[in-house]
Image (tube, rainbow, N blue to C red):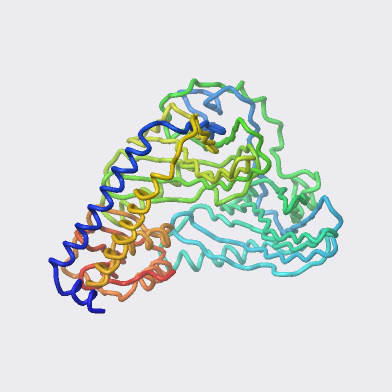
Length: 547
């Protein structure tokens, strides 16, 4: 205690202690360097490996004078575009939907429980969404089916009320119909399988039509402790029609019965036109963009187990002003080489840019669009386990009425592991021990003195750490900007005591949280007409973000 008191009260004593320990560390390091100066060992690399990724995309065009036909692929390949199912609302009497599920396993099962939840999500992408639970049931066995109605009148009424409240009217109404099945199954070998399966389609209501988009059927595979399993889920529909001259009084079903088609067979479409990579695209005549990402892991030693977790994110950025991240493909588990597809909705990105410009007043271009794929790979070799994250991006630039892609679509990342060390010549190493002991003693002394030094003053709150945690937790609603709009004369500023309260208000108002960084503090706010809700992190108002 007396030594500690002297150390705490005397700056000179602390300097002397640190100097002596540092001198001992330097002397020991020099002695060890001399003792190891003669080469005595050589390291032989054990293995090398490589991550390989490639983006690809197809741009589908509306009919235009420039290109003349309907499709503009980036590379020559045959692609079949999904055609939405179209029904005419004036002759629809009733719509019934069903969701079916099937579970198959490579081993006999001892018991299977399936909890299914079917949800209808009404949304105006980028502005608002409302989730309505339609079915919630539990079933035993390998398969089941649930039936539920799709009430167009009720769904229209819900959206009418929302749009009346917020004052925004849309020309079409999107309803995502999503089924999620949580399955628990036991096998005869004692393995327990627990997994979530999700499948969805989209119903689009227009003034005169109902369209069903997306694959009616979906599947997924997995394994647990060597036991492989497969899940399948599919939607069925029955559209009951009033008597009409087009069909008569019939029921249109998903089991191969006819759907609404033109009375006359259209002429064959002209041949598809292929354009070379690296061209300039025009968003006004783009109908849709379908992209894909492929990944492969190569190693020059045998790999016994390999799994990946992939996530694809779109990042919209006005350089130097703000950026916004959107999840295109949520975290998905894969095994071995894989390829996944996803849309690049350039029209939705334009809507997001317009909404942020309107709310922040920070306009101007060009804008950068970046599609980022993060692949977390775990591979077991006979030397050691490889556990790495591989990241690849596809960059685009949206400027005026043009869209351009980066030309580089492929990328790779190499690595090595498992080197072995062998001696080149025998020698005595006992004389190295004093230097090694001196280095250990010096490191222990410096560590102890450093720890005591940290006890002499309180640790400051790390504002940047709290800000980083907040950005990670609320990245879906947060927009980074360079400068907040000025406070107007008639504007009311309401300070809040926590960022959690601010985010709850943002959810209620369906507005983004604006984030500005200043020296030693962060400002978060929501602008709602003549009211500004504000929270400050740093300075005199520091708040830790909840986990």
